Length: 192
Image (cartoon, rainbow, N blue to C red; front, side):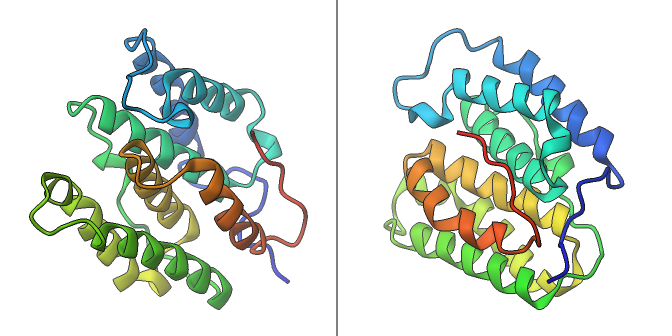
C-alpha cells in the first residue's frame, strides 16, 4: 500500500509549525480550564499537543499534524470567538487515493450524523451550521483535494464538536485512529 503522506515537509509545513507556536501563545490567555470544556479539549491538553507537534514533528506524518492543527484550531475558536481559523481551512487541489476518500467520507458523514441529531430549533444546531457547511464542502470535492487540507478540516470539525461535548475524544480516537492509520504503510506514532 502506498503511504498517503510521507514523513517529510509538505508545502506549507512551516505554516503548520507556525500555527502551533501561535497556539501556545494564545493558550496562555486561558489560565483556567473552562468548566464546560471536556478535559481533552482543555488548555493543558492542547498545550501538550502543541508542544509535542513542535518538539517531535518528525515522528508524525503531515496529515496527522494537520489534523492536530485543525483540532487545536477548532477548540481555540470555541474558547474565543475572535480566534479566526478560517485562513487555514482552504482546500488545496490534489489527488486522494480511493482509500483516503473512503476514510474521510466515513468520518465526515459520521459527524454530519452527530450534528443532525441535534434539534433543528436548538441554538447549538444554529451555532454548528458553519461546521455542517464545511463538512458538505469537503465531501463535495473530496476526490480533488489533497490529504493535508482535508485533514485540517477534519481536525477542525472534531475539535469544535468535541469542545461542544458532542463526541468523547478518547472514544473518537478509538474509532478513527485505525481508519486514519490504515492510510499509511508503516506504523504511526500516537500521542496520548
